[in-house]
Length: 67
Image (cartoon, rainbow, N blue to C red):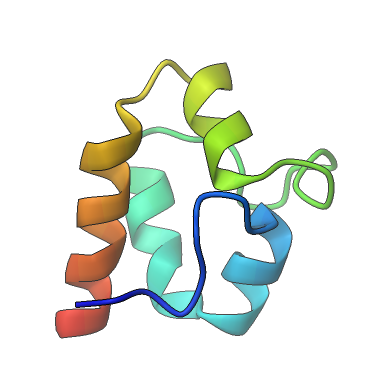
């Protein structure tokens, strides 16, 4: 499934506009939910910061839209 955003999308915008993504961030133990840096980080940035495989994370986000 194609996501309505990409790896360069802003984390805060994703969390606000697509709340079904919140559990995915929490599953990966990402502290993006409520983080003051969220408005400035992209998915790519957040994955680097949290040492998470970006492709796995994007796959999990896509799964959140399939449910």
